[in-house]
Image 1: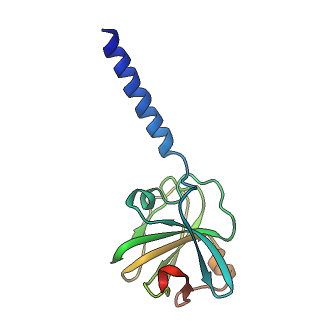
Image 2 (image 1 turned 90 degrees about the vertical axis):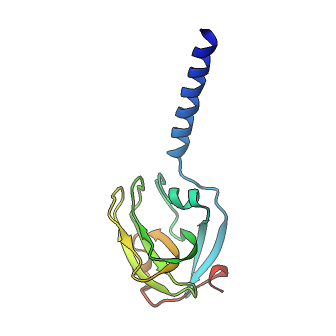
Image 3 (image 1 turned 60 degrees about the horizontal axis):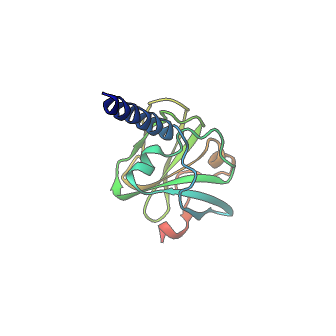
Length: 148
């Protein structure tokens, strides 16, 4: 009987550890430099499905010139939401050539959908207000390795 209890206890601890790990922000993704006019962006790259699913969830702060670039395999009508995301963000839906298709301000911890107005392969999330304060809007072209 003891081995069964030991195995069950180990299983419960394993599940508890996995649940706690899921509540941690991902901070060690690869980074690239993107420019928006004269502004530099240090972007973490979320390319794998599990990286894109977690995104910026559980982050309590993000430096002003930092963001996250979500990279998908092919252009599609992407929609984002903010469940478990603590920071107010703006999503820039970006075409293959780096042109911002549309921007969407997103409230923390909501499940409202924010969608691209046409199929895109990239989404760049920044602190809410970052794009507006710099006059960056739909039609602005971003530059960097992904957009070449």
